[in-house]
Amino acid sequence: MAKSISAQQRKFANKWIKTHNAYQSAIYAGYAPATAKNATQRLLENSGISKYISSKTKKVEQKESDEADEVLMNIYRIASGKPITHSFTKRDNIKDEVVTDETMTSPAPTKEQVNAAELWFKLGGQLKNESKEIEKQRARKIKADAELAELRVKQADGSADSQVVVNVTLPEDGDDYSE
Image (spheres, rainbow, N blue to C red):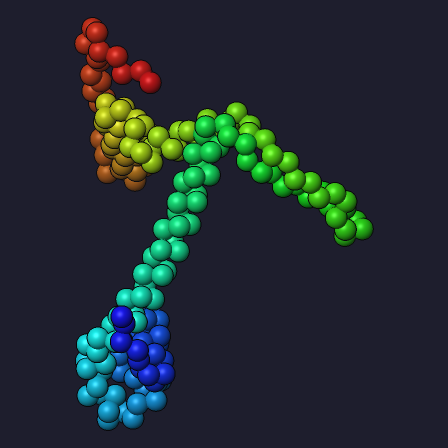
């Protein structure tokens, strides 16, 4: 069972969680400046305080994990075409009042299902955005565009030759670089 801590130690721990400044946290908790300067390491090493801090961080981690699980469950439900609850509110902006408030349960529209399925597979590493060859060709194009832009700047300020030579390498028969 966790060792209980005093109210002053709890105040120190809560402030330390927020600031990670042990000295200021000790001052905030009511320790005298001289005591705070010498006690900060001892306070952080106190087993009761460290267990308290650990329990606080675990609660937050668990809450975040639960929220992430909920998001993943919703993505999966949408992707698999399971019914979800849709809430609609129609408002008359001139009268500044709610006209209707509706809730219905049905599968998401097909486009949303496809988007959710794509996201689900990407999250699972089962769907890659693009092939390595397409990425390589995009990088090659970006480099060529940058070189052309640099050449145009040099020509504009007169520091480049007036003649431009462009080398083009065509794909060999059987190579397909189309997207």
